[in-house]
Amino acid sequence: MAVLTLPHCFPLQSVNGRNKGELKQSKCGGRWWCTVAAQQQELCTQFERIRIDKSALKLEEACSDAELWATSLLRVRSFYDFKSSFGIEDHKKYLAEHEFEALKERLAGTKEGQKVSCINATLPISQTRNFPDELCSSSKFSDNGEDRVVVGTLDLNRCLSLPNEITGIKPKGIEGDIARGYLSNVCVVKECQRNGLGLLLVEKSKSVAQDWGISDLYVHVAVDNNAARNLYTKCGFTYESEEPAWQARFLDRPRRLLLWIGIPNH
Image (cartoon, rainbow, N blue to C red):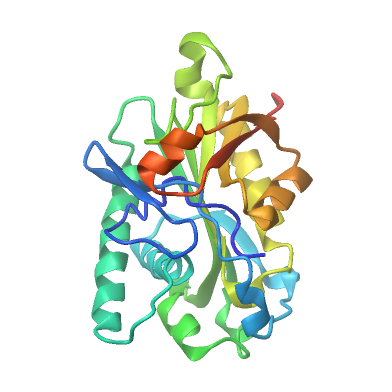
């Protein structure tokens, strides 16, 4: 499974340029959002997947700068398809720095009524011996003296809508300000896909959404991203609406579906 979904607006908030698959960026209020982030579905045949020890896995909200930086590097690795090696490391650093600053801005909640959490799946460095060296070195951070590696990530956004995306209709009225949420920037490193990490990340986000008082949770997904659609179906999401073809053409990206799930009260 390639990613999980297109980043809501990847906010890889990121930057100029986009992945050859579905990544498309848009700027709103000085921020970049990446819409439903989805990973290239066919890449899975190009490498050997790694089975992980789920007992060592942590699913938590990121808060330290070190973990957010590791997350930003992982998102650049996941959402961009670099075709040339010329200046690639400098370009990756630029993209990661842009996402890092945008991510911190989102988490700070500078817009009234909006709340964002970065939820990560991480493994201790001792469980990543079979991982590529570049993944371990770039996505590593220290947590209470323990080195861990970010292997999956997503953003949970409490807000009325996401820039350049079709908007959910539930709940109606003023409650939408604080009771509607969206998932974005969902991805799992390609080497660890098909370990159920996407499902675990989404389930964790639903728990956090419930704690925030969110009653209606949404995610955008490209119509041709079958892996992401299957994932969200397993998580209980159902179809609500879809992006008009003219809008997708205007934004030069694959057309999106909007999926919904109700979050029960405690």
